[in-house]
Image 1 (tube, one colour):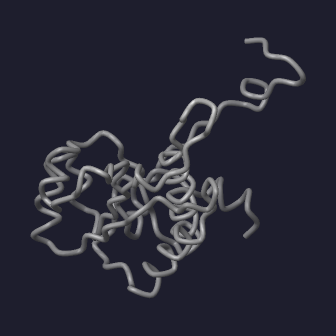
Image 2: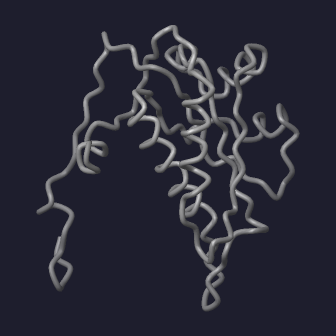
Amino acid sequence: MNFIELATQRSSVRNFAPMPVEKEKLLQVLEAARIAPSAANFQPWHFIVVTEPVLLQLIYPLYPREWLKSAPLIIVALGDHSRGWHRGKDDKDFTQVDLAIAIDHLTLAATELGLGTCWICNFDVEKLQNIFNIPDTLEPIALIPIGYPDLKVQPVKIRKSLEQIVHWNDFEV
């Protein structure tokens, strides 16, 4: 499929079928994140792939939504602020921007492989850091559950029109 079709097909999946994700597909998804561009090519990211049921049981309460329990695995996306590029003029840290690009690559690759994902940012960061003994230099940015979508539940995807978001040569709201 072409890129616009792929991007249109990608949606936030909140119900997963009870099927494991093949390691080959998971490695392709992780490779897509690995090759993502980053500011000054600093690549300030780490990913924890969580497949062990005991660890998944510890993560579920950090974002207490029943549907999360249907995900066969969760990727924890971490930003390394000590390795991120900072703009010289105002010291703006681009770690989160870089990680967002990598996560976007990951979610699009998953979609192409028939997998579903959801981008979760509303979770208990401190408890997650304790579960995995994450150092202070790394910030948990997102949880990405991955699995085969439960086709009985179709996600609704609503987007603004181009006229609502694109401004030509000036800015008027």
